[in-house]
Image (tube, rainbow, N blue to C red; front, side, top):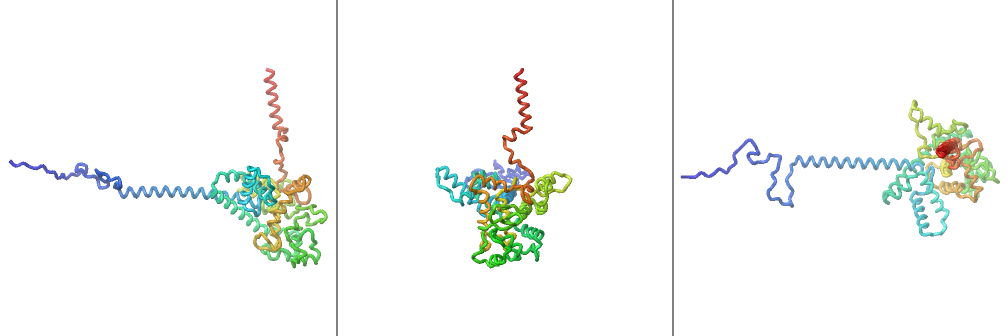
Amino acid sequence: MATTSPDLTPHSSESGSESGELPPDQSQFPVHVDPSQPIPTSTNVRAKRHIAALEDELETLRQERGTKQRKTTYYVAQGRAIRRMVVLYSSLEDLVAENDRRYESLRLMDDSEATLEQDRMQSGYIELAQTLPWLHEKLGQLEHKESEDMLKKLKKGADAACGDDTSSLEELVAAWVNQEFRPSPLIKPDDKHSRGFTSDICGKLLCPAEWDWDQNRIKASIRNRTMDYIVSENSWPVFMYENYKVDRDKLEEGFLKLKLLVLAFKAIFTSPSSAKEADRDGDGADILENNRCARRKSDQAKVKTCVASIINMKKVTPRAIAYIVCQVRFALSCVSSWCTVDGDFDYEVFWNNIVDYFEVVPGPVTKHRVDKLPSWNGGPVLFRKFFGTNHRQDLMPEVVSHMSVNALAEQRRMLEDATFDSE
């Protein structure tokens, strides 16, 4: 009897699972896996995973780029205070290096004397740390490369602000000189070539205090740059004096008490239109307070915050004065682009000379006198107009302790103690 062999061929079926086959979009896991070989995956699945990974990477890049952009914007904006309030020429890296050197010398108990230039650098770093209170700590947290990048961005903002101020004052100073002196021809607001010593009025304002511009011999010698009449940073220009008059036997009389300086100061640190307040007294002349009041009025359009508020400037400082004087001097000159040296005149040394006038004094009597200068109360134009009569920085703790708020609090404590003791 013949036997029938079993049929080992799989029977067809509508169900893939019944036939023992995997659906088309799946791969059968091999029985023997080679660990060096990949396990087959679907093309569609791989593409989806790749797209998702790229999207995640793109989002991460966007976030990093946004953070970096915000940091750049912040540092550049903060840097706009540096030329105006800290240093006009010295590099930030030099200031940081000098502070590090000082600290290292102190740690090693090195008592060698610093040079005048090193003292200037250290004073600049202290001023920098006060102007940007967050900077010193930040420098200690960042890696060297990050610190370099931050200082670079701060410098970018500093230079941009200086350039903006130079452009603004080029036209404004011309308008102020024309209005006050009525020269013929008038000073052109968009032409520097007609200024400087070629102009009678600009030449008079730029003339060194020790010489009389009205003497034709001196005027001609200055214009011809003769050896006996070299105009350099070692002379104070006439425009730095009240009413542009100089007592050569008392050179400090009226020094830095001039209307032109106040006009320029207000134009830069509040707004060009606020310079019109320079001749006024009372509350109307307090530009910062007016600015704050305007912002509090909800029924008006948004008021642009002034520079002094943005850079947290609370008072007129010697370095801010030095900055404005240099800017005014440049605006009166015939040089068309900002430079360190104009003929025989070095602006960097000139800026140092003004700062040294305030910071390097022979004794306490002189220091007391120069400390009063930024808010002096004489002459036709008062620096107090810029910040009004705000003296908050002069409120010492011992003074505040006797004022009525604290006095009332103390009386209440005493009454409370007396009642408790009686019980």
